[in-house]
Image (tube, rainbow, N blue to C red):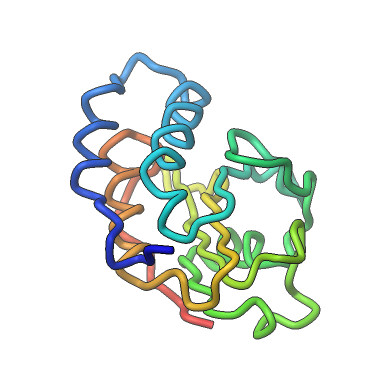
Length: 165
């Protein structure tokens, strides 16, 4: 199965920018984004992707592909940590997280989480991607996806730091 080196973010970004406009709701942009991301990336080792919104002390699943996932989840896992610490997290092996790992699919071996920010700097949620392969994600993926999400209006601000676990 092809890996991260073949992820064509430039083509994906162009496609998404051409299909979105500022009048679209956040929900509509998320739905479009997960569909296009899945179409472009599921053959590169990604087993699931989606967005979670923070609702107090929990995170609730919003748009996602291509299977169900846990919802709500607490703020103790990688998604909660990315939101609270305002940093992207590349999890090279989910075993590295120990008890802090929220296992929605026991076959997942690596994860990428990117916090999403409103213009006022509030972290409204996260983008989460999983893989059945270890080391499926890199800091390059985190930066490229953050840039893409900025371009389509899902997040604002500079790219957050990336923590590799």
